[in-house]
Length: 83
Image 1 (cartoon, rainbow, N blue to C red):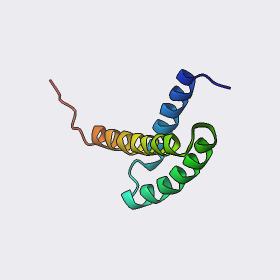
Image 2: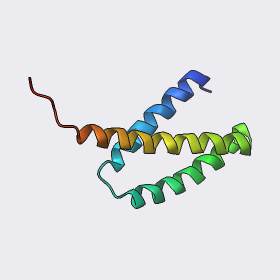
Image 3: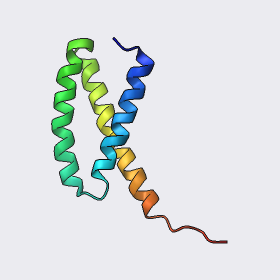
Image 4: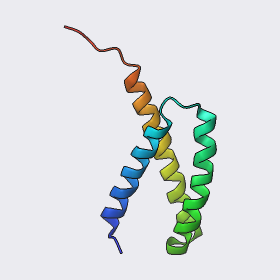
C-alpha cells in the first residue's frame, strides 16, 4: 500500500496528464468524460475512505483536471514579450 504523500503525488500527476489530453478539446467533451471518470473514481475510493470522503476526493480530482487544463490553455494564449 502506498503512503499518503505518494498517493497525493500520483493524483496530481494523473490530473496533469489527463488535463493534457483535453487541451484544445471542447469543454462538453471533457466534462462528459470527467463525469464518468469521477463516478468510477468515487466508487473505488469509497471502498477505502467511505462515500463522503470519496465524493470530496473525486470532486477535487476533477476540479484539478479542469483547472490545470485552463492553466495550460491560458499559457498557450499568452503572447511572449520581446525585449
